[in-house]
Length: 207
Image (cartoon, rainbow, N blue to C red; front, top):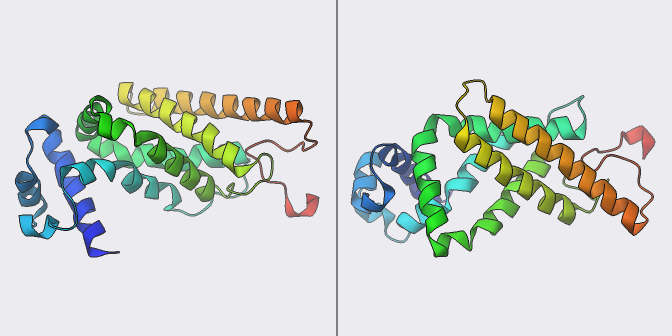
C-alpha cells in the first residue's frame, strides 16, 4: 500500500474517533495526526482534512470483498451479503461517520464528488458479488442502479436504532428488489431477450 494512502487511512480512523466527540469543523489536522500517532509532517504530500473525508467511502468499500464472493446463493443475495459487510464495518465508527457525512452534505466541494464515490462503491459491490459482467444487464446500468441502492441504504443505516440492523437490512432488500425490477423493465423496453435476473449470473451449464 502506498505510504501516502496509508497515512490518509490511518488519519481517517483517528478522525472518526475525534469526530465522535467533537464537531468536524473544530478538528485540526494536527489533532488528527496526534490521535493517529503520526507526525503532522507525515501528512505533507499525502493530504489533509479534505482528503480524509474523501477517503471515507473507499475505506469501507473494501470490507465488501473481505470474504471473497459468496457462493450457492442468488445474485441478489450475494449483493445483499457483500453490501451488508460494508455497513457492518461502518458500525463501530457510527458517531464519527455520521458527523463526517453531515459535514460532507453541507460542503459543496464534497457533494459534487459524492456521485463518483457512489459509483465506485457500486462497482466494487458488483465485483465483490461476482456480478460485474454484462450478463442480465449492461454493467454500466448495474452500477447506476446499485449506486442508488447503497445511497438509500446508507440513509436508513444513519437512522438505525436496532442492534440487529433491521432498518438497514429492510432498506437494502427493498432497494435491491426495486433495482432488479427497474432493470427488468428496461430490458423489456429495449427488446432484450435475456431472461436472467439483473443481479443474477447464469450457471455455467446454461451459458
